[in-house]
Image (cartoon, rainbow, N blue to C red):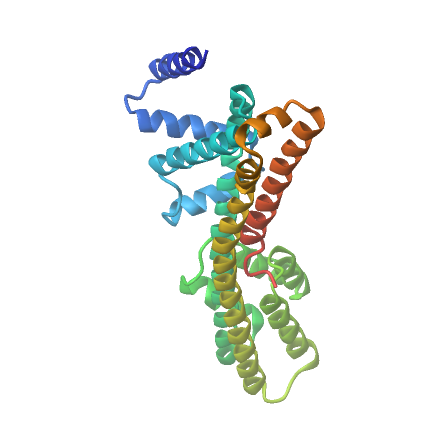
Length: 298
């Protein structure tokens, strides 16, 4: 039966490949994979993927294939070790493979988030330095925008701030727009400072701005330290989570494999073992989500 399934999969792949106009297997696989992403990923996926691709950090086709194979093999080993049933194993393998697009998307979100934070850091630091020369928030924005130090989407948003400030005759709307799009402390604190300077006036502005630059440096240092801590946590967390799956091997050693297989015939034991696999998988997913989300948002 397994041989028939494998043959059917190979036949389907060949038929689909033959329909493809391109002659490259890698190109075909990547195109089909991207279609799945575009169809099921959130609306922001295209923006994030384009930027990650531009940064040269998108997975290559061999890396995608390796990831699929890794999830499939791991899912097969774990599910068969728990249930000794080929059909249940196939179900778990399919679920594992289907999770690959979402895991890859979370990775892209992390890379994109790190990129945005770096752009925000450049934005805040350069606006303050420009203000020390121009003594005008809008002129500072124009200086940073024309300097070429920013990239999209932050650069486009800075242009929108400039246009809004001139249209409204006030910086309030522009600042509100930026605060909502980039909810970082360094952005909100800098904008609050400029509101005070613009509306209330402030003596010794240069000293205040220098203090703000120092605060930004401290906040940035904390974010990079947090990023390093997350990376260390992620490695140890994955090792710990994977070890939890194999606790069932100890149980089988204590009970003997034959006794364990007999226990599988009991519905309650079968349900409990499925619950163990599902809860441990959710545990790993939450850790992966923590590692990949909200990078730099304090």
